[in-house]
Length: 500
Image (cartoon, rainbow, N blue to C red; front, top):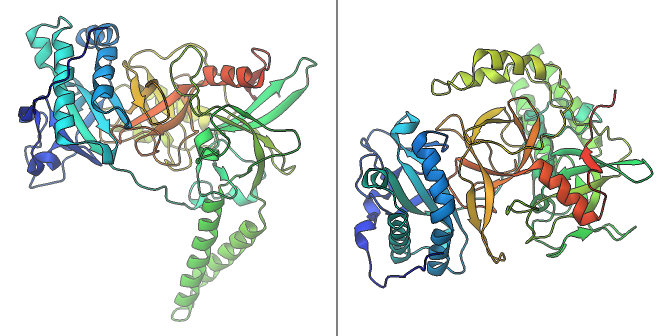
């Protein structure tokens, strides 16, 4: 590893002036420094006519991208990380390598090494110094001058916001009429305002062939304050520490409040206009309110979780899972996709040529009846491969995305080293694959096989980066990590599949 020389000079030629930061078009981010602070591809050309938003594309498999991805991993990454950590030794930050710019054509936008630092941690001097260090590392890697010009470096500052509660009826109107808790449902701890997505159900087959089914989501959803400790947690038999609800308690309360509000509004309207349709709607809402009030949202309790600083085996990415015992006898636990009608029409967005008509037809047909999950895919995603997120707690629709050829690097307080994470970019360059509350959602590949589990993004917490980027862990490695932590036999944990 090349030694990093920290400069004491203020390299303000990289500084983005305060009055120009909004022109960089990064949602929720302030650009502090850039290797090309005046480049037209970095700055909005018509700031007076609209609020600019850059397009984000995944690094794919063109010759330059393939070459740069190899150089980045072999010669750049470790030195860049050392330089950032020397400048910001105790800060949360994230590093992504993306195609980033205002052009709708992916390859017309520069390859950008994009650094985002948590809100309180970044100064102008530190941002400029990070740009300088990265440029020095790139210069030493042997890229020619034309390749150097096509690579940009940006350093931004991030801000965060809280998760809003939502009505579960907006996601599934039949939720209070069914004993099923489908994998897209909201989930959370009973006594803490934390919300995520139910990944689904796993099954463990013991040495005697007996099968036990558990619910699965992310640890930070169920234990947001880390009260279960830094090490992997396993329930002390008979003494569960945390009850879990599905739907999440806060979403359940919000749903009841919204139903009450709608009833009150309609009742007020009938005082001025006695309409039979309004009366029927009130009757329907009264029944929905009754069903919600009587619905048992208990799922069970935490059985085991990953450790706070744990890495997935043979991956270098964070381990973030929680396994729950399903103790509510009324629950019908099954890994079924929600019935989906017409979800794939949204893939007609003009820039999305990768999703062809044959795929849209096959996908619509497959998910029309709410099928059971397919077995987990074991092999790795390939650069530029298409992936899809089914409906989840917050992003209540199917979303297509691309696997970025260069994994994200994330550094968070409490971890001695940075982690490398799967990085997913929405097919719509102005869209996003997930949002706050979607942690735990399953990602499927083009053959509809579950391949990864979402644990974050800048809008989720626990990661720092552009709001259009989603981070995930390989599902197969997550299942193997569960076996390791619980000292279960390798291969004894799988998704609970349809056995009919």
